[in-house]
Length: 364
Image (tube, rainbow, N blue to C red; front, side, top):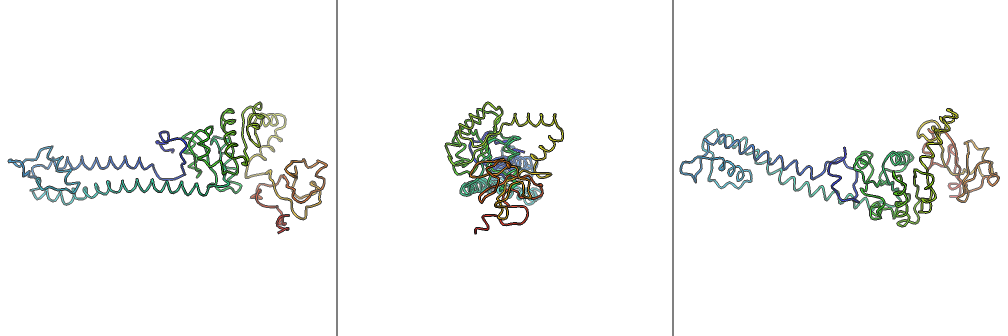
């Protein structure tokens, strides 16, 4: 469950996933325990007051105020000696009940202070170490359905969870990201300072999946200004905003509503075609769409002649369909977009599927 204190914390703070409770929650719990020990001891002394003697009172009687006074000086180990247990059973109660309570009381006070300081120190150290390691990482803005799916795809294809940072103002998203082992910066991504805390300036990729297109535009603008070289992918709800988001600095824009509409249309026209498209978009089973290097034995061949089902060729940064005359013969440096079985993993980092050497490895 997300921490109940999240909403009261400063926005833009980096929070790393951890299984421990909040130190302030622990502090409150321990203060209540200490208060409980005090109250219990006061009641114990008061109900056993005939067994105690007050040297400052001519009658020697112990009142409720005396019980409170005796408890505080006893548990704090001050012990002035003006009120003492006189009866044997009162001394035994002091030896076997009040003395352990005194030890527990001191442990609570000293241990709480040390733990709060140590926890804060550890958290500061973890954040500082995390910032030093954050280079060429991936920043995901928004951890809703689209953001979680994007992170899951990245992790499933070899991206380390520690190299992913989520930016989201929601406490619910924070709890879910922490449960998934992802670091979170709480705050609004339309604010440049929040993105700066997430290390956008050193990020390799920025994925923006906000719920509002205007927020997507502002987040894209800020991310591009902080990092001119990052590859930015943004999702928009309306197709009319695609060009605006591109002008804001996005390298790729995905229209979520149009994509869903096309899938629904395909499924209604041809259920089998819709099933195949869903298979291609689903990770981990059936078929996968993948990008790989061109292998040395494949240089000079036609895309249709390769073992993998080639659907596009990337040459000099341009995407060509497999039937394009410009890529009739494959050359060194080409990259292939292929369809192949999902069990052949990982699909992105590996050169090929048949054990050949890639062009880069051959040159080395």
